[in-house]
Length: 256
Image (tube, rainbow, N blue to C red):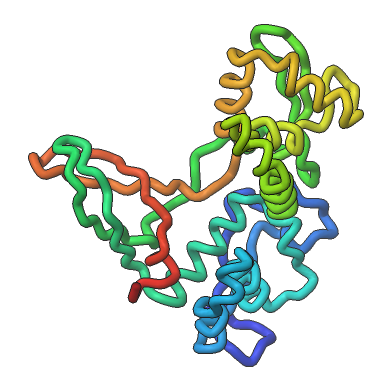
Protein backbone atom coordinates (compact mmCIF):
# COMPACT_ATOMS: atom_id res chain seq x y z
CA UNK A 1 0.00 0.00 0.00
CA UNK A 2 1.12 3.52 -0.71
CA UNK A 3 1.40 6.33 1.80
CA UNK A 4 -1.16 8.91 0.79
CA UNK A 5 -3.19 11.95 1.77
CA UNK A 6 -6.44 10.01 1.82
CA UNK A 7 -8.22 8.17 4.63
CA UNK A 8 -8.33 4.90 2.68
CA UNK A 9 -5.66 2.53 1.33
CA UNK A 10 -4.29 3.20 -2.15
CA UNK A 11 -1.70 1.83 -4.54
CA UNK A 12 0.45 3.68 -7.07
CA UNK A 13 0.49 2.13 -10.56
CA UNK A 14 2.97 2.70 -13.36
CA UNK A 15 1.43 3.70 -16.69
CA UNK A 16 2.55 1.97 -19.92
CA UNK A 17 2.94 5.38 -21.61
CA UNK A 18 5.29 6.57 -18.83
CA UNK A 19 3.27 9.80 -19.05
CA UNK A 20 5.28 10.90 -22.10
CA UNK A 21 2.29 11.71 -24.33
CA UNK A 22 0.44 13.97 -21.90
CA UNK A 23 0.99 17.73 -21.54
CA UNK A 24 3.23 18.63 -18.59
CA UNK A 25 0.34 20.28 -16.78
CA UNK A 26 -1.66 17.05 -16.90
CA UNK A 27 -1.19 14.96 -13.70
CA UNK A 28 -0.90 11.84 -15.89
CA UNK A 29 2.42 13.17 -17.21
CA UNK A 30 4.04 11.85 -14.01
CA UNK A 31 3.81 8.37 -15.52
CA UNK A 32 2.00 6.98 -12.48
CA UNK A 33 -1.53 7.00 -11.11
CA UNK A 34 -2.84 6.36 -7.60
CA UNK A 35 -5.93 4.19 -7.20
CA UNK A 36 -7.86 3.08 -4.14
CA UNK A 37 -8.57 -0.49 -3.14
CA UNK A 38 -12.06 -1.58 -4.11
CA UNK A 39 -14.62 -1.90 -1.33
CA UNK A 40 -18.26 -2.92 -1.08
CA UNK A 41 -19.11 0.54 -2.39
CA UNK A 42 -17.30 -0.21 -5.67
CA UNK A 43 -18.98 -3.62 -5.82
CA UNK A 44 -22.30 -1.76 -5.77
CA UNK A 45 -21.13 -0.09 -8.99
CA UNK A 46 -20.02 -3.37 -10.59
CA UNK A 47 -23.34 -5.05 -9.83
CA UNK A 48 -25.52 -2.14 -11.00
CA UNK A 49 -27.66 -3.54 -13.82
CA UNK A 50 -28.52 -0.02 -14.91
CA UNK A 51 -24.85 0.94 -15.39
CA UNK A 52 -24.12 -2.36 -17.11
CA UNK A 53 -26.98 -1.86 -19.57
CA UNK A 54 -25.79 1.67 -20.32
CA UNK A 55 -22.29 0.36 -20.95
CA UNK A 56 -20.70 2.78 -18.47
CA UNK A 57 -20.09 0.51 -15.49
CA UNK A 58 -16.28 0.53 -15.87
CA UNK A 59 -16.24 4.31 -16.36
CA UNK A 60 -18.07 4.72 -13.07
CA UNK A 61 -15.73 2.26 -11.39
CA UNK A 62 -12.66 4.18 -12.57
CA UNK A 63 -14.16 7.48 -11.39
CA UNK A 64 -14.68 5.91 -7.97
CA UNK A 65 -11.21 4.40 -7.55
CA UNK A 66 -9.15 7.36 -8.84
CA UNK A 67 -9.04 9.74 -5.87
CA UNK A 68 -7.33 12.60 -7.73
CA UNK A 69 -10.31 14.35 -9.29
CA UNK A 70 -8.07 16.53 -11.48
CA UNK A 71 -7.47 13.39 -13.58
CA UNK A 72 -9.99 13.11 -16.40
CA UNK A 73 -10.91 9.70 -17.80
CA UNK A 74 -11.28 11.20 -21.26
CA UNK A 75 -7.55 12.03 -21.32
CA UNK A 76 -6.41 8.46 -20.69
CA UNK A 77 -4.68 6.61 -23.48
CA UNK A 78 -6.30 3.20 -23.96
CA UNK A 79 -3.18 1.33 -22.82
CA UNK A 80 -3.03 3.38 -19.62
CA UNK A 81 -6.73 2.73 -19.02
CA UNK A 82 -6.04 -0.99 -19.43
CA UNK A 83 -3.30 -0.75 -16.79
CA UNK A 84 -5.77 0.82 -14.35
CA UNK A 85 -8.31 -1.90 -15.12
CA UNK A 86 -5.69 -4.57 -14.46
CA UNK A 87 -4.55 -2.92 -11.22
CA UNK A 88 -8.11 -2.50 -9.98
CA UNK A 89 -8.87 -6.16 -10.66
CA UNK A 90 -5.79 -7.37 -8.77
CA UNK A 91 -6.47 -5.11 -5.78
CA UNK A 92 -10.15 -6.03 -5.76
CA UNK A 93 -10.20 -9.77 -6.45
CA UNK A 94 -6.62 -10.98 -6.38
CA UNK A 95 -4.04 -12.01 -8.94
CA UNK A 96 -5.53 -15.31 -10.18
CA UNK A 97 -7.75 -15.09 -13.26
CA UNK A 98 -9.17 -18.32 -14.67
CA UNK A 99 -10.20 -18.34 -18.33
CA UNK A 100 -11.19 -20.79 -21.04
CA UNK A 101 -8.77 -20.96 -23.98
CA UNK A 102 -8.44 -23.10 -27.10
CA UNK A 103 -5.51 -25.47 -26.69
CA UNK A 104 -3.17 -24.59 -29.63
CA UNK A 105 -2.31 -28.24 -30.27
CA UNK A 106 -5.56 -30.11 -29.67
CA UNK A 107 -8.03 -27.32 -30.46
CA UNK A 108 -9.99 -28.32 -27.36
CA UNK A 109 -11.23 -25.75 -24.86
CA UNK A 110 -9.13 -25.82 -21.70
CA UNK A 111 -9.21 -24.00 -18.37
CA UNK A 112 -6.16 -21.83 -17.76
CA UNK A 113 -5.33 -19.72 -14.70
CA UNK A 114 -3.26 -16.58 -15.25
CA UNK A 115 -1.24 -14.78 -12.57
CA UNK A 116 -2.17 -11.20 -13.46
CA UNK A 117 0.80 -9.77 -11.54
CA UNK A 118 3.15 -11.35 -14.10
CA UNK A 119 1.74 -9.32 -16.99
CA UNK A 120 4.16 -6.63 -18.09
CA UNK A 121 4.09 -3.78 -20.58
CA UNK A 122 4.50 -4.23 -24.31
CA UNK A 123 8.04 -3.66 -25.55
CA UNK A 124 7.97 -0.51 -27.65
CA UNK A 125 10.45 2.13 -28.78
CA UNK A 126 9.83 5.14 -26.53
CA UNK A 127 12.31 7.23 -28.54
CA UNK A 128 9.47 7.93 -31.01
CA UNK A 129 7.58 9.81 -28.29
CA UNK A 130 7.90 13.56 -28.08
CA UNK A 131 7.27 14.54 -24.49
CA UNK A 132 3.87 16.07 -23.97
CA UNK A 133 2.44 15.59 -27.45
CA UNK A 134 0.30 12.73 -28.67
CA UNK A 135 1.20 13.12 -32.32
CA UNK A 136 3.10 10.88 -34.75
CA UNK A 137 4.00 10.94 -38.43
CA UNK A 138 4.09 8.02 -40.86
CA UNK A 139 4.91 7.82 -44.56
CA UNK A 140 2.78 5.19 -46.26
CA UNK A 141 5.09 2.73 -48.03
CA UNK A 142 3.09 2.41 -51.26
CA UNK A 143 1.40 5.74 -51.94
CA UNK A 144 4.14 7.75 -50.17
CA UNK A 145 1.45 9.93 -48.61
CA UNK A 146 2.42 11.34 -45.21
CA UNK A 147 -0.15 11.12 -42.45
CA UNK A 148 -0.06 12.50 -38.93
CA UNK A 149 -2.03 10.63 -36.31
CA UNK A 150 -2.60 10.24 -32.59
CA UNK A 151 -2.99 7.27 -30.29
CA UNK A 152 -6.58 6.64 -29.24
CA UNK A 153 -7.76 8.03 -25.90
CA UNK A 154 -10.79 7.12 -23.83
CA UNK A 155 -12.61 10.14 -25.27
CA UNK A 156 -11.80 9.04 -28.84
CA UNK A 157 -12.97 5.51 -28.07
CA UNK A 158 -16.35 6.78 -26.85
CA UNK A 159 -16.78 8.98 -29.94
CA UNK A 160 -15.89 6.07 -32.25
CA UNK A 161 -18.43 3.82 -30.51
CA UNK A 162 -21.08 6.55 -30.76
CA UNK A 163 -20.42 7.07 -34.48
CA UNK A 164 -20.48 3.34 -35.24
CA UNK A 165 -23.73 2.98 -33.31
CA UNK A 166 -25.30 5.82 -35.31
CA UNK A 167 -24.45 3.91 -38.51
CA UNK A 168 -25.99 0.63 -37.35
CA UNK A 169 -29.11 1.00 -39.51
CA UNK A 170 -26.96 1.46 -42.63
CA UNK A 171 -24.69 -1.44 -41.60
CA UNK A 172 -27.67 -3.78 -41.34
CA UNK A 173 -28.64 -2.98 -44.93
CA UNK A 174 -25.15 -3.09 -46.45
CA UNK A 175 -23.66 -5.77 -44.20
CA UNK A 176 -20.52 -3.63 -43.89
CA UNK A 177 -19.01 -2.87 -40.49
CA UNK A 178 -17.66 0.75 -40.53
CA UNK A 179 -15.59 0.42 -37.35
CA UNK A 180 -12.16 0.39 -39.03
CA UNK A 181 -12.71 3.44 -41.25
CA UNK A 182 -14.42 5.29 -38.39
CA UNK A 183 -11.39 4.63 -36.21
CA UNK A 184 -9.03 5.92 -38.91
CA UNK A 185 -11.09 9.10 -39.29
CA UNK A 186 -10.80 9.82 -35.57
CA UNK A 187 -7.15 8.87 -35.35
CA UNK A 188 -5.66 10.63 -38.37
CA UNK A 189 -4.83 14.29 -37.74
CA UNK A 190 -3.62 15.32 -41.20
CA UNK A 191 -2.94 13.99 -44.71
CA UNK A 192 0.06 15.56 -46.48
CA UNK A 193 -0.26 18.49 -44.10
CA UNK A 194 -3.99 19.05 -44.69
CA UNK A 195 -5.83 18.93 -41.36
CA UNK A 196 -9.39 19.39 -42.64
CA UNK A 197 -11.77 16.62 -41.63
CA UNK A 198 -13.25 16.63 -45.15
CA UNK A 199 -9.85 15.77 -46.62
CA UNK A 200 -9.22 13.09 -43.99
CA UNK A 201 -12.63 11.49 -44.57
CA UNK A 202 -12.17 11.45 -48.34
CA UNK A 203 -8.69 9.98 -47.98
CA UNK A 204 -9.91 7.15 -45.73
CA UNK A 205 -12.94 6.37 -47.89
CA UNK A 206 -11.39 6.65 -51.35
CA UNK A 207 -7.60 6.86 -51.30
CA UNK A 208 -6.26 4.76 -48.40
CA UNK A 209 -4.79 1.70 -50.15
CA UNK A 210 -5.31 -1.65 -48.42
CA UNK A 211 -1.56 -2.36 -48.56
CA UNK A 212 -0.95 0.93 -46.76
CA UNK A 213 -3.63 0.38 -44.13
CA UNK A 214 -1.95 -2.88 -43.14
CA UNK A 215 1.42 -1.15 -42.73
CA UNK A 216 -0.22 1.70 -40.84
CA UNK A 217 -1.96 -0.63 -38.38
CA UNK A 218 1.29 -2.56 -37.84
CA UNK A 219 3.17 0.66 -37.10
CA UNK A 220 0.49 1.87 -34.69
CA UNK A 221 0.66 -1.39 -32.77
CA UNK A 222 4.47 -1.17 -32.59
CA UNK A 223 4.37 2.21 -30.81
CA UNK A 224 1.23 1.81 -28.69
CA UNK A 225 2.01 1.51 -24.97
CA UNK A 226 -0.19 -1.13 -23.36
CA UNK A 227 -0.33 -4.21 -21.19
CA UNK A 228 1.07 -7.38 -22.78
CA UNK A 229 -2.03 -9.57 -22.50
CA UNK A 230 -0.36 -12.89 -23.26
CA UNK A 231 0.48 -15.74 -20.92
CA UNK A 232 2.73 -18.82 -21.07
CA UNK A 233 0.75 -22.02 -21.49
CA UNK A 234 1.78 -25.67 -21.77
CA UNK A 235 -0.52 -27.63 -24.07
CA UNK A 236 -2.00 -31.06 -23.44
CA UNK A 237 0.95 -32.69 -25.21
CA UNK A 238 3.52 -30.70 -23.24
CA UNK A 239 4.35 -28.03 -25.84
CA UNK A 240 4.99 -24.48 -24.55
CA UNK A 241 2.98 -21.62 -26.10
CA UNK A 242 2.11 -17.98 -25.50
CA UNK A 243 -1.66 -17.50 -25.56
CA UNK A 244 -3.82 -14.39 -25.66
CA UNK A 245 -5.74 -13.71 -22.46
CA UNK A 246 -9.42 -13.04 -23.13
CA UNK A 247 -11.14 -10.42 -20.99
CA UNK A 248 -14.55 -11.84 -20.11
CA UNK A 249 -17.24 -11.25 -17.53
CA UNK A 250 -15.25 -13.11 -14.86
CA UNK A 251 -12.53 -10.45 -14.96
CA UNK A 252 -14.50 -8.18 -12.62
CA UNK A 253 -17.22 -10.67 -11.78
CA UNK A 254 -15.19 -13.78 -10.79
CA UNK A 255 -18.12 -15.45 -9.02
CA UNK A 256 -20.25 -15.61 -12.19
